[in-house]
Structure formats: C-alpha cells, structure tokens
Image 1 (tube, rainbow, N blue to C red):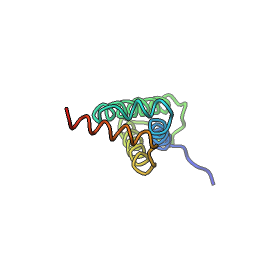
Image 2 (cartoon, rainbow, N blue to C red; image 1 turned 180 degrees about the horizontal axis):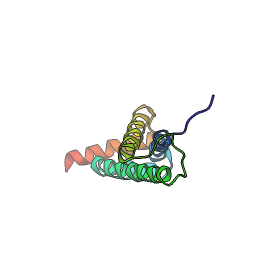
Image 3 (cartoon, rainbow, N blue to C red; image 1 turned 90 degrees about the horizontal axis):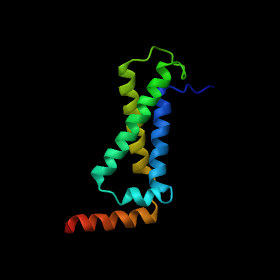
Image 4 (cartoon, rainbow, N blue to C red; image 1 turned 135 degrees about the vertical axis):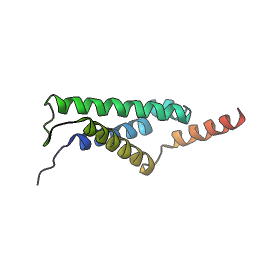
Length: 113
C-alpha cells in the first residue's frame, strides 16, 4: 500500500508541524503565547498562506507530481487543508504549562487594558 502525497496532504502535514512548533518549541512557544490572539491568527494564516503558495508552485513546476493539472482551485484546497489540520492539531494537542501560564497572564492584562 502506498501513500499518495498530494499537495493538500503535504500542506496539511506542514500545517500540523507549524502548530506543534508554535505550541511546544522552547522560546518560540512563549513568544507566540504572549501575543494578542489577533496577531497570532495573522501570523499563522500568513505562514499557512506561504506554505500553500509554496506547495502550489512546487506542483505547478513539476517538483511535486500530481495526478491532475494544478489550478487556482487547487491552491485554495491546499490552503484549506493546511488551515483545517493546523487548527485541529492546535485544539487537540495539550499545551505546555508555560504556554498556559502566559496565556492566562495575557488574558488578565487584556481585561485590565
């Protein structure tokens, strides 16, 4: 049995890896957790958009072999797959204790401001 590494699957895997990196990589996780939620969303969506465009271009230029011609609709499905898997990984992965602490402190500070 072989696994077909479609552009959507590759972007989804990278989306999961990004979620894990920003949630558990020392230094990166504390910096990211201290940001406002709007900034975090913007950073993650920007990175997922870059990943999606990168995967799309790799498929477009033949570096990644695809069963069908690559289109702009494929780009959107790649972005959608990366985003869905990224957010799913974020929701089901336990947070590091230091991240929980920083998030709690950030929420309290935002409530005061």
